[in-house]
Length: 142
Ligand code: RB5
Image 1 (spheres, protein in one colour):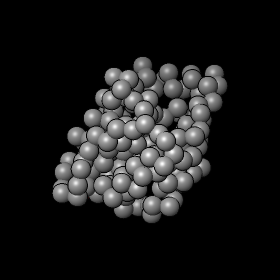
Image 2: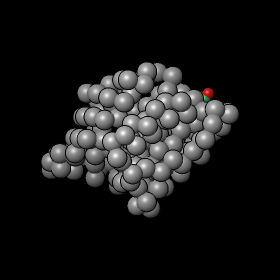
Image 3: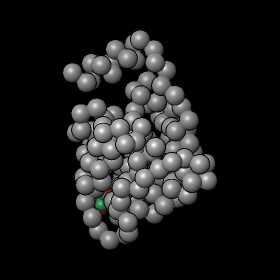
Image 4: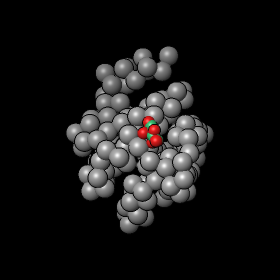
């Protein structure tokens, strides 16, 4: 299950990502927002982050205007490793090295075609599970 959320600044890109998830057969749940009316990104970061911590979802995708505020808010939740990525190299590396459980992007930063490639790369890359990466992740979590 993929938990997805955005504020108004990420709403349009979120709709594109949802279409992609549907076309690829991913199970997902949209935690809002549900329109372009101005709203507060921490609310959706918390909903998606808690869905992962509560094991309702394995991974999440969060989108705001820049991806910055929503990723900062998500990373306040213990156990969340939210990676803000605007390129495919970072999307792959953060799954391999950080086992990131949320991908954040900025709807005002990347166009839909690049965003979909970033999401595809992130969703399809498994954690390397190498000792050095597990050790470093554990050092974050103390
Ligand atoms: C909303 O205007 C904007 O501040 C928000 O989407 C995001 O970019 C915050 O980091």
